Length: 162
Length: 99
Image (cartoon, rainbow over all chains, first blue to last red; front, top):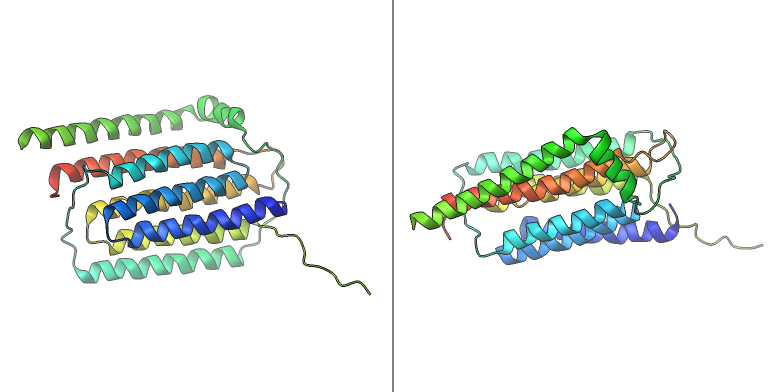
């Protein structure tokens, strides 16, 4: 990886982590939506610096959609019934997960290799999505259709009940 | 005697995995820590972002020769799945929750 891509990677990683922290810790839903959009921009930058421009474009659109939904007026609050103890255990588990992932990233022995693909290899990715792994693509498309239809039905049934 | 300047900036798979680990851990922490279930659902894209970064990094630094774009493909599917899951989660929350 050359210096320009490496600098882009580190800067985009910082933007991604700041956005992720904002989405995790911001108190208001508008701030969380904005932070999610920022993390989408950072994620797209990381993908572009990793020569995955097509994935970056898709991520930018999808995370903008997520940010719009989180910050939108249809947002409702659902309080959990889980106790403080369980939430603290979950937070400690997340910290343990970070420690385990960092340990494996440090200790593992990786082989260096050169990347021969282009920066925006949409045709090759499309060949994989639509020819090689078409079942996985169809499964995700089905998930998307079911999610959007389910969300629309849920929202409409609530509006009708009021 | 010439003084050597700093070497070129570079990033490796380890750096990619560090970023991925940090993003996944932030998402998992928020999902566990948030009392509001809807806010916890909104952290799904954060965790998926970390996984996507790891997959794209493996595709970028794969050592098997040629361009193996399976990781990029999976990153694309993860982004779409994150959008779908957030839509479904917020839809269900909109049915059950209060303003």
